[in-house]
Amino acid sequence: MTRLINIDNGGTLTDFCLVDGGEVRYTKTLTTPYDLSRCLFDGLTKVSELAYAEPRLAALLQSTDCIRYSTTQGTNALVQRAGPQLGLLVTDPTLVEGLAATQAQEDLLAALVGFVPAIALFVAIKAINTLTRRAAKEPPVPAPPTQEVVLLTEIRDQLARRGA
Image (cartoon, rainbow, N blue to C red; front, top):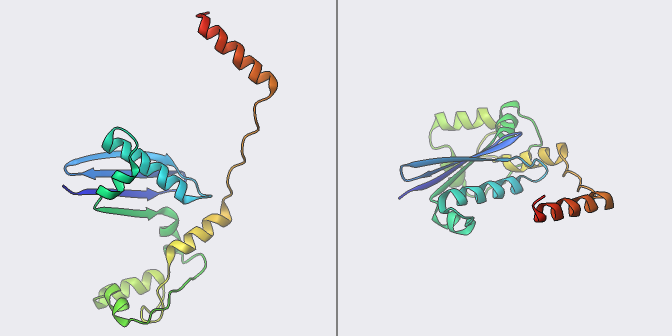
């Protein structure tokens, strides 16, 4: 049986699609632009609940054949050619040849990323994370409840226990 997880990381929501044999299931989680790993693992945990009826992230990852991850930010950065240009220098020419086996693939790769494949390979995910970190900050930690709120909560709970 083949298990596939598709992830689309958007600006507001991150969508997860689990294809498990012939069964397809969906879930979503809020995107956390200040830390994309948080929404990724929150969503994968929700997917594990779909697969096992309880959170079993490690079991899900070990039994998954393929995970595909795409981002709206990544697509936009490629299309708009925005963000810092990062490179990976390679000494093995067969690596670059494997990325663009035909002239059509090489042309497409050069058009999307805007470089000569034999010279450098741009690492888009690092650029995306850099842009995301600049634009978003972790939300502030909420203030603890006031003494009045704590007291009212205790009264409410006591009344609920008495059946009032």
